[in-house]
Image (cartoon, rainbow, N blue to C red; front, side, top):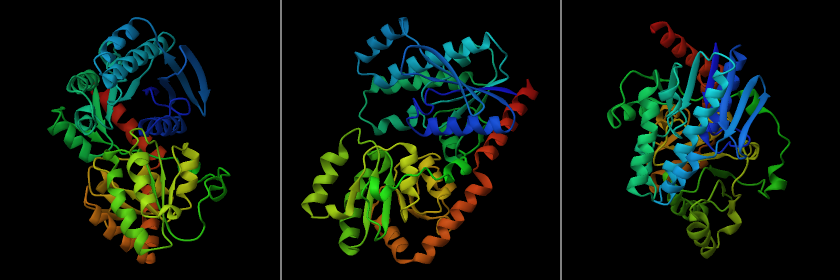
Length: 402
């Protein structure tokens, strides 16, 4: 098949988050299966830029002109998310249209988040699949955003969702939410996210002890995510205070973007006041190889999110055979089976996380056993090629029905 992926986020230039990570693994997985794969991604410089990497043809695009005037007007109303969606939708449409001038595309996949497919699915006659990751309708209420921005953003995303030929989701939880809350028509095919284990296991030559001054002694708990409430960062004060007092050799390690200043404003002063700084390490925002290098050296991975779908932070911790303590919210229980591939704690309950972390710290056999089982689960079900194969089956079934 000749397959196109529309994703503004695509490493390295625009590899900002989970959707970019998914698109990277998905594109390479499809290419490994022998398909011709194109990615239409965002660019930080104006124009259209073509390249090829690991068997994937990449078109990066940044369009300027009338769309900028429109988005400037929207931005003046404090509707930053909606403005971003419109720019992304127009860029993806222009990039795919440019691609269709030179060859036929059998199928297009795009995420609902970002609005990548809003114009392409509406204006171009190519079979397409929308994949649910984190719809604005479901998550924007957790952020300090104007009502107009929430409604406009959801409306842009809805264009792509409604016009797509087939719908998929990275978790059953999110498929059900899309159907019940967003009134998206079923069927919604559940295809989780996948990972390239060979690439993940590669030694990047990063000495995390020297580079980040992490201690080699003592157990380490690692939080790698954005420092925001949706990711549960507000719960870590109590965790750090209780556990660092109880276990003097324990260390908490944090890596991620502190976009809203919560770490600098709330947590670091709290830690300093209680003289716990020597056991607390904030590394800031790291690139993916550095995050993975740290992940391979820590003992327990912490995911206290309030809302999740099928997060790569969890999949990568599973791939690294780490002991995992995760929230019982969203799609996380589809990855973490309690006491089998990790421990689940009640969402938004610091006490539940403290108890689960204590259990992982004190029971080394449990930590080792769940970490090993988590890796086996990834090897069995969540490799990039396995997920690409499942996706192609959905594409082909869709085409056969037309």
